[in-house]
Image 1 (cartoon, rainbow, N blue to C red):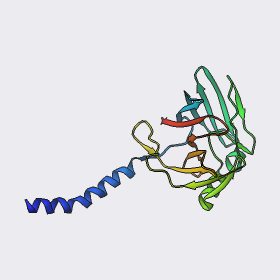
Image 2 (cartoon, rainbow, N blue to C red):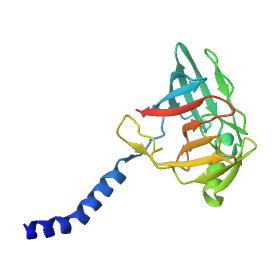
Image 3 (tube, helix red, strand yellow):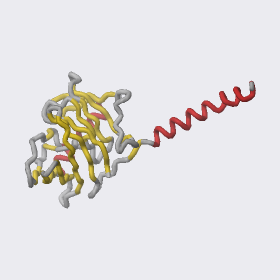
Image 4 (cartoon, one colour):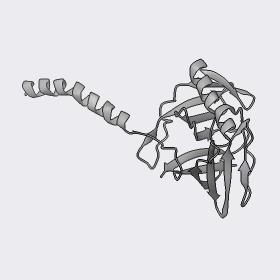
Length: 194
């Protein structure tokens, strides 16, 4: 009995390493390429609405999304300049059949590469005229996609802590994964990627 107890104690650290390794491997890479579909839930005044955005990469660069919400469809196109150095988010409500081409200072559903770089280097950065602070992801607030995988996300809050963003930790395509307490538009949360 004593030998079994000692063997169990000796195996315990190996089990912890295995559990940690399995948890880390549960992180999933969100592949940003033409054809990838992002399924969000949009929360507007307490009403949840499913939103699907299918990624496409325009010939001129940037990133585009073919969106579908209810019976409404359209396109959002982030310019190459906006994706590189944009400093404002476009939260205008979509309309049926719209093809919204964003200007060089705007992004939609994604942050600019320059903003993400600044945020990661300095632990704070400005976007939408507000100061955002990089924070540790609060325990229990990890996103779980398709009820099985966690994307590699970074977390930021507004200066007063009222608005929170989970952002894909991808230097080329820092997608919005979740928005909570949004002062400029609806909250949203990514539920699935396929």
